[in-house]
Length: 76
Length: 382
Image (tube, rainbow over all chains, first blue to last red; front, side):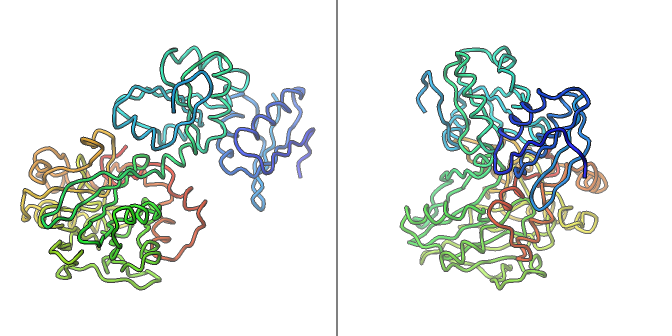
């Protein structure tokens, strides 16, 4: 299990809230810190990857477990 | 959907009207770029711009700059949430005449619009159901209190309601072939209404349910007048593909022949085997039919194929003059055209085929997701 500096739980939330919450949390992090985002919104998986790429942060890992999507993002 | 200073809702039905009436509309699609490139709302009078919602979280300035004021503006996303979120900010920023699409691209994909094709000789009538968002077409033949539905789409409630409005009983549900781009509603409709479900036996080798065999020589009567549904075996898109001649006037070509293209032979994994059948059907079998027949396909690939009022239809003789898929004289060129450089396959087409065989039983949400995107059943779709 990866260690994250902050965990953002967006389970049960629909678009756009998972990314709105994640963005808010990421804005508060220092460069090099890692954020873990939990989401149950299948539709936001593609969005999440596109958003991380667009903002030039680093997607370290993403996985799905029992319908919960986990994303680890390192702030650049 | 009156224009006002606040935020307005637009339904898929409203949007269909706008596309049909060629009313100017500016669409801001806030889905991610790859989903947008794959599939979007199209229309002759529509300007469209893609900025993902997550690029607008710090403010909608970019969108405000790129979208000229004074236009009717529709914000669209996959389901609805993000479009509403962005549209609200556009309104706060002072923009007027702003709408969001209720239910997003999902409801656009599922909306069906019935249009009347014409009257039948003995008093019946024929309707086409246009699924704008996905390019699928279903049909209802009505005569003397009875109806047959052809290539029924998954939204069976639309057909049940329409039949009730017309005061007719649905007696038959027919599929021209085992579909690979959308989930057939034929079997469900038959269960709901007590109708008989017909499928070409050669496409039904692996199905898990009982059905009536749609074969040449087994004419189907609708009502007690002589509205004949005459099956014509026409393999090529699938091995079982069967066309239907209705009332000696209409030719339902399924996925063999469209208005501006022809069907692809590869969705069941057998392009090489079926290319000869496809050629035989299009260049010999259909040639031997009355050239006055009105072709009614099961799909369209682009909005340019929509005619007056959204109808998708053309005379067979006209298609032999205008459809590029019917004008390839050289057999080798034909083979290459229908087997090489084909467009990507429809989303989840393998799972869709298994579902239509009864081997998979996805729930409503899963079915919706499987059907996302364009149909891509024609060789020229891009």
